[in-house]
Image 1 (cartoon, protein in one colour):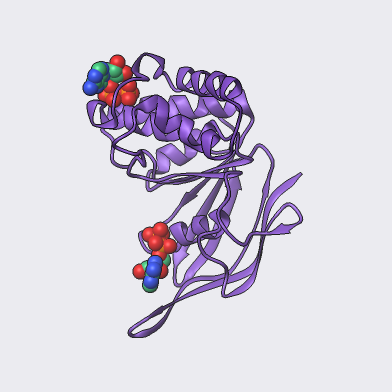
Image 2 (cartoon, rainbow, N blue to C red; image 1 turned 45 degrees about the horizontal axis):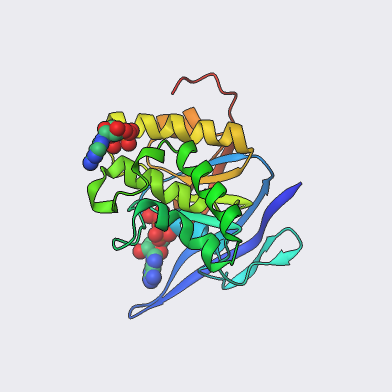
Length: 227
Ligand code: ADP
Ligand code: ADP
């Protein structure tokens, strides 16, 4: 089952110096349950590709589809985790995770059960009443992940989610994301600079190059790497 399909996509940003081609003729089909890691130098269009899937940008040419539907904007079915944790500082961790379901008017009982389930899954059930500033970077990133998971997205998009963390925390987060992928069978699209991370986590690695933003190589991995 194809979750996302991008065909002949170009993305040109307008700038003072004219237009910048961030993506050139990108073709990508993502199957349900894949764990895709995108590798490539800075500026090669990784974030731009993620933003097209997220619905933040639309291709200048070509198409981006989710199932049979063109991607025209962001939606809770494509949850995004950024390098910097995105939490409301004035809400506690529980309220942060509850925010999405509350906006979607999920009934209180169901909401409570979901929030608890995902806080537990990311290892934060004892920190529900804490405010974001009280937690470490790794824990805030776990909370950001719970905020996305609670919406039960069809796909999780992550832009260098562990890039700002120290080595040990990064390793813990890699283990966690692998566990979540195992448990939920979710489709994951993760951008990283770290070759080892890509090889450890991905079922398929996509390599991009910046001349200009193109997919230049992709391969399936066989999970022989330890995290
Ligand atoms: P990566 O995530 O691989 O570092 P990006 O997708 O962020 O690459 O950027 C690809 C190219 O597009 C770069 O040359 C970058 O400078 C340019 N770019 C990204 N966002 C914008 C923007 N909003 N306006 C103009 N140029 C941009
Ligand atoms: P990780 O995110 O992998 O758990 P961290 O370095 O973020 O790694 O934190 C390690 C552990 O230390 C946490 O799981 C938590 O139990 C504890 N911890 C870190 N910061 C705090 C804090 N501000 N308050 C309470 N416990 C904390």
